[in-house]
Picture 1 (cartoon, rainbow, N blue to C red):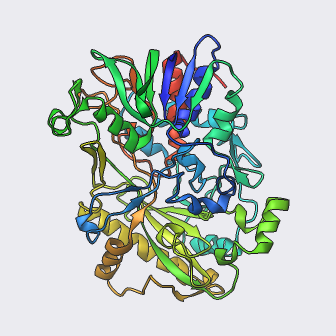
Picture 2: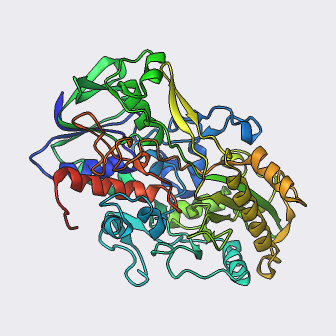
Picture 3: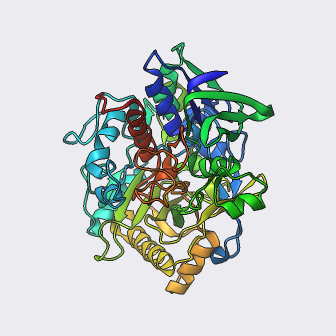
Length: 517
């Protein structure tokens, strides 16, 4: 089988590319995805995403033991399904702020230059708050249909603490507090597959192959000519192979194909095609640690799965099962020396324990404290055919200090007058801590990923970068990487929005010129 473009991975960026490239009837496009169809009820139902964890819809990764996290191996869920992680995330549309993109220092990728690609993607439902969003794109951005009563209390508590109310979370600055905009359409998840892939499936020039795990990129010399997937079958590319397999999958495939550090490839038994030592390096992730509080009133998501709530969702598309769990956020600076927020506080009107996999024992609330700009850097590597994920959490002391500061702010919010009708003391496993050392130990023992790995195929203008500003892999031909692995540094937000933006911009780079929506 031969096509003009071979795209690996039907996640956020891959779905964008499949749509935009196949819009030209003169080219043929194939999208190769390891997972299957996205028609499971738990994908459609916003609150049910945790039920997809550790199932066939999940890559179910585990990190290497983390010495600074009490020696734990951490679970990393990633979507193995059409739509990728946009089919199992918390649907939060959080772009980040101006400083995120300007600090990359890459021509064509400053905030002002990437902003049109965000707005091209967006279809804002309701008030557009001064034109911050696009209104005609394929990806719905809406308010939650049935926010919890405790969420309003959290927002009032943020005001009590003197934090600024954001008229719109996704403006150039995100410092302050706001309800969370979500990727939902009339109370159901609206993934990248819903927005981009499904409308394009009727095109004769687009082929989607599911259940096909790509093993390697095929090279003729240093030119990528296709991919080989499960069972040894090959799909050939006349023009380009595009890796959109994410911050783990894309560097893994490059290394499996002979592009990476020569010594590491030799040890893994892989023949060298092009030495690029930075492949897999620069791994960054948003680490989170939460404060859990018992709730005095039986109003939280602990009762979300009742028969009444299920009926309300099925009939009216409203109620607790339309929640994304992270219903409101606050972005704060731990020091005025920070140029922008370095901590995010996510309010969940329920006890979110162990990725939501541990059933709560009662009604409770969570404020997740997220480290937005980690100093620590890890790697994705090879151990034979196996992938090695080592985020190197908390290997820089500043990361611990920022998380401890954020936990203190979260406790202050729970202590505010607005929360008194609901907050009723610490909820296990969280315990009140008297010192910074105790809070730091809580982070080490119970901290988890917020599901935002990035940076492992770093984009840059320097020769050490993995991809150039047009996302072409250095030193080879016919091969690009298009996903959040190309981000030099993590954004002060979430990674679904920049993944979509990267897909939109890459489509223009491939097709040439700035297309207008």
